[in-house]
Image (cartoon, rainbow, N blue to C red; front, side):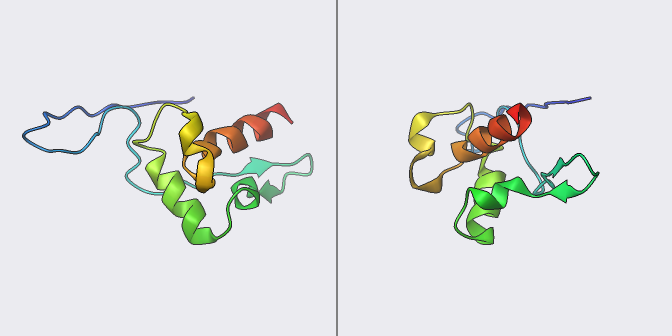
Length: 88
């Protein structure tokens, strides 16, 4: 089961965009191969663990997918990675 929760705020009260999926902790994103082994596929898309973790966290408020966030290893690269992994 998949769930998505949204949080809305007034701009003057709290100036963060919290609508949509709000990631409060970095999730453990992985795929399982035919032999039951975890495969951490996001690491193939980012240059460092810090860059990967930062963009995975940002994915919570930088949505939906946008082509400009594909540039410079941005947060929409997470969407592409998950799409490719689920299509494999």
